[in-house]
Length: 202
Image 1 (spheres, rainbow, N blue to C red):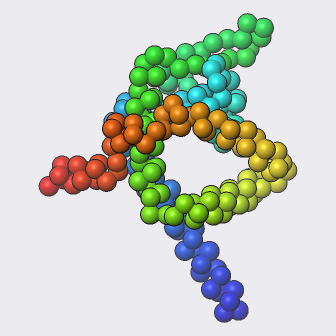
Image 2: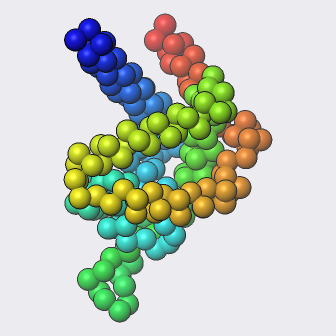
């Protein structure tokens, strides 16, 4: 019973750690993207379009972001009104709608991405390289367990294969947006923002 109690206590502490980490990460992302005229949700949609290729279907964007099609459609509607993306109808089937980025979105997306990469490096810098591999794999197992809870019939192996295909584009993504030199030159770290915010509150 004592071992079970310890395990339950550790589970709760771990859940709290994950939740707090997510909350702080979200706050940091909100701050970064706000500086570049984007919300975190808008940026996520632009990232998915970049990875999926333009034009991208709303259903594919929703799947890529693990969101419902309806919620992504609402975000897309607001982004169209804001001039960040445009709708493109399929010539063969007018019912199918694609979206692509506008020049306005492009001008905000690249500097936001460079700043985001710098922030990611800063946050992960205390964790040794090999430990990051372990962390990646452990978080993956938690993610797949959550997917099974949400959808008991989910084909986890197919999801893993799909993720490997998506990961193949990471090198190109890094070449385009993530070079360490450009991140240092153009990005702004969470630490600098925190210092800046402290000055404002004084």
